[in-house]
Amino acid sequence: MARLLITGGAGFIGSHTCVVLLDAGHDLTVLDDFSNSAPVALQRVAELAGVQLRSGSGSGRLQLIEGDIRDDGALNQLFATASAKGEPLSGVIHFAGLKAVGESVQDPLRYWDVNVNGTRALLAAMESHGCHTLVFSSSATLYGSPNQVPIPESAPVQPINPYGHTKAAVERMLHDLSAAAPDHWRIACLRYFNPVGAHPSGRIGEAPNGIPNNLFPYLCQVAVQRRPELSVFGGDWPTPDGTCIRDYIHVMDLADGHRAALETLVSEPPQVLTLNLGSGQGASVLEVIHAFEEASGRTIPFTISERRPGDAAVTVADPTAAWQRLSWRTQRSLAEICRDGWIWQQGNPEGYDLDAEAA
Ligand code: NAD
Ligand code: UDP
Image 1 (cartoon, helix red, strand yellow):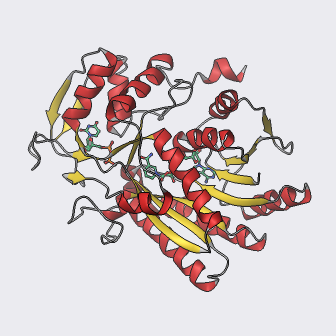
Image 2 (cartoon, helix red, strand yellow):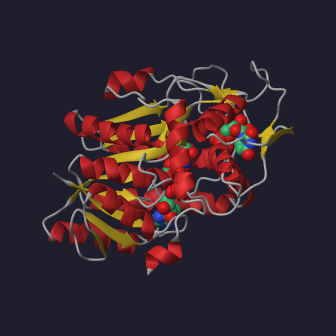
């Protein structure tokens, strides 16, 4: 089975996808600069998949290279070394990037540099080394405040923050690249809705730095009493219970979606596939709180506060195209999301224990 490059493979979605891909028989090279993750996540991926993690120039089923996607020289060396060893990289799953909406408003140039310039550098290296298969982490954030729910892929791309603009720009770049060499490129732009939960073992999960921006990790930290209470951003939205509705997708379903996208790309003629990855089911903030209370047996203290600027009332995927094109759809319920997220949070109340595991 071919070797794949996984950029950002130590991160939340990347680490879960590595487990699924290793289980499916792929050999992986992870490139990560650990700006928002740590090598221990990959040690645990290796443990879950029953393989050895090898750093630097060693190969093996799971190889780790510490580096930055913006470093053209390092990327070229990585592709060249893999070919020289007789294990050319046949495809890339590109997770590496920055993802905090608020931070992107404060520091837009950094977001354009990492997300757009970093992807440009990656694509240039792929092109020079004859690697033309790419799965890209796009985001439902590029729909902005949608006019239509559930949201089909044909909905207008109208981001409302710099993070969303960088995702839209990369999608544009990928279409331009494919138009220039339509017989070569096999590309999937996967527009994720709200990835949450954790591997059911509780060994890998989401470990945000500092105060979480997102609902689910915040909720998990309230449940283990790292934070006193949750603020629910707005109780006067035009929804049945007054709180915002989102499409939460179990990270293991999302990981399976990447495997399905890759398999479809390699078995079909070159193309650009653009697909929503979501469940098609909406849950309100209050419904998520109650499902989490049920799964954890803990009470989640919360107060209703002001609306958060930039939020949309309802964001739910139309997942029909992913089912038609990939034969993929979500398998795991909100109750399973909460169960697995709780197992992870209970076992790792402070996230990954970096000191213990570095020793
Ligand atoms: P994450 O921060 O956990 O993972 C990203 C990984 O990329 C981290 O390991 C980080 O260290 C690495 N990285 C960042 N900049 C890098 C660079 N310049 N060079 C090399 N590595 C670098 O994030 P995630 O939640 O796993 O998201 C993965 C991708 O999915 C991102 O592109 C994100 O924009 C996209 N996405 C995430 C969500 C979400 O809610 N989590 C939703 C939609 C899209
Ligand atoms: N939210 C909340 N309190 C929080 C974080 C988020 O009420 O501390 C709400 C937020 O307003 C949105 C939903 O939870 O309606 C999901 O937000 P999140 O940031 O997780 O994802 P988004 O859909 O904004 O990408």
